[in-house]
Each structure stands twice: as structure tokens, then as C-alpha cells.
Length: 195
Image (cartoon, rainbow, N blue to C red; front, side):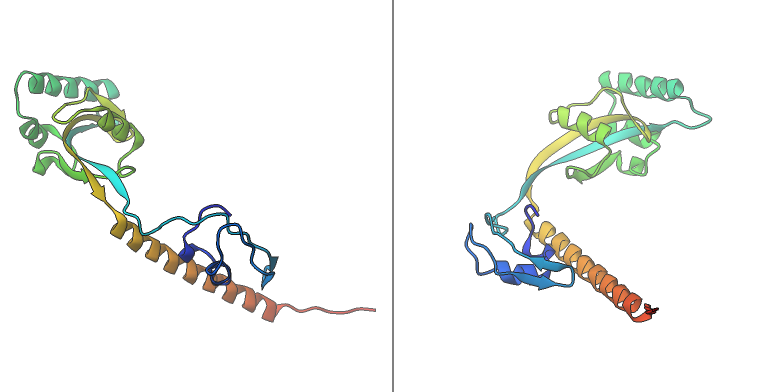
């Protein structure tokens, strides 16, 4: 079943695996699904800190629409990029031209963790060095100009634990609802024997 945190395993499995050492087998376990035999292959230290690289960035977005063609949006953003390359302030240009909700903050997006943006944006952002501005980047939202302000390594262990707790509660409630549904289904089932 692969790597699973204890809180993502059915309680029957988690309790049976808890006292085992890697390489040991559980006894035969019986559940509503049938009989199970589990082997503990290894353990991971889930208390170890989890570090990710976060990027603080800002951007300028020019959206495409029925009224604004791809070419028009790209040309408009290219003109903005030329003015930034000539010395104009990125944040000021974002306030004046960006069509994103972050425009009022100079395009500032704050600290971004991996997976929080669309892949095209993240790939372009990750290729930049600090204080570097991207070329034009196309995404499903339109055309972007991205500037990386800083990078940091952040410990997200606590956030990950909170998310795991939320997932465990959600899985427990989902399983409980499923078991309740099965019970109701069995109670309503009618079997007629004919000879």
C-alpha cells in the first residue's frame, strides 16, 4: 500500500502495525472487507522537519479576452517590459498596468510555495535568480511578466501536520458516512427465496 502516515491507515491496520519492527508480519486481520495480512517494510520519521524553497515574487498580468487578442496582450506587455528594462520601477508599472488583484500592491504575491501557481508561471519563476525579471510568460490567465524578489527555505512541518490532521478527519468522516450508507443498504435489502 506504499508509504502511508499512521493517520491515513484504517484504525485496524494502524493498531496492528504499531508494535511491529520493519520486516515483521501482522497476524491475520479481519475487517468488513475481508481478511488481511500486512508486512511492515520500513518506517519513516514523520517528526523530521520538512523544508521547502519559497519564492517571494511580483508580477504584471495582461489578460486575454474576446476584446483583447493574444497578440495585443503580448505586445502591450512587451512595451511594459521595455520600459522596465529602461529603468522604470516594476511595482509602479504593475500598479498602472496589471490586470491582476495584486496590482494595488505593486504586483506583490508574497511568499509562494511550490504548487501554488499554474505550472507555466512556476517554471518561469523557478528559472529566475533573485532580482531578475522574466521574459513574457503565457498561461491560461494571459501574459505575465515575473520578478523574483527573494528566496528562502521554510520549515512547513507544522502546516503539513495540520493538513494531515484535516485529511485524517475528512477521511474518517468519509469512511463513517460510507459505512453508514452500507449499513442502510443492507437494512433495506430484501432477499426472497423461491422454490
